[in-house]
Length: 210
Image (cartoon, rainbow, N blue to C red):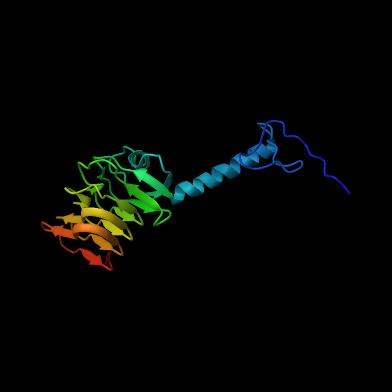
C-alpha cells in the first residue's frame, strides 16, 4: 500500500483546518502567491463593503452607524447588516438622525435585539428621514413607559420585524409617509402601532398580533 508523505508546515495554518499533504502551508510574505491572495481578499472585502457594513454580536450598533455615516455634512445613504445572534441594547436605546440608513437582519428570526435593563428611552428613536428597520426581532419586555420604536422622521419603514413584549411597539409621532408592514406583534400589552400628532400618508398593513 502506498503512503502519502506528510510535509510539516513551516509556520502554522488556517484555524480549524487540518493540513493536507503539501497543502495549506503559509506562503512567504512578498511571494507572488501571497500577492495574489492579498488581491483576492481585497476584492472580496470591496464586494462586501458595496453591499453593506456587517455587524457581529458583541459589536456596537451605534459604532457601526458612526462608521458608515461618517461626519460629513449632508452625507447620506448606508446599509448595516446585523448577523445572527443577540445584541444587548442599553437603557437609552439608539437614536438615528441620519438620512437613508437601513438596518437589516441577515438572519430574520435569529437576529435578536434585547434589553435586560430598565429602559429610559425607546430601543430605536428614528428622527431622520428615509430610515428602514427590517427583519429584526426586538425583545423589550421590561419596557412599560416608552415606545419600542418611536418615529418622528418622514418616509421611515419598519418591515418584517418581530416585537416580543412591550407596552407600545411602534409610534408614528407627526411622521409622514411612513410604513409599518408585515410585522409580528407578540405580548404587546397596550398598542401595536400608535399614530399620533399630524401623521399623514402612512401605510400600516399585513401585520399580525399574537
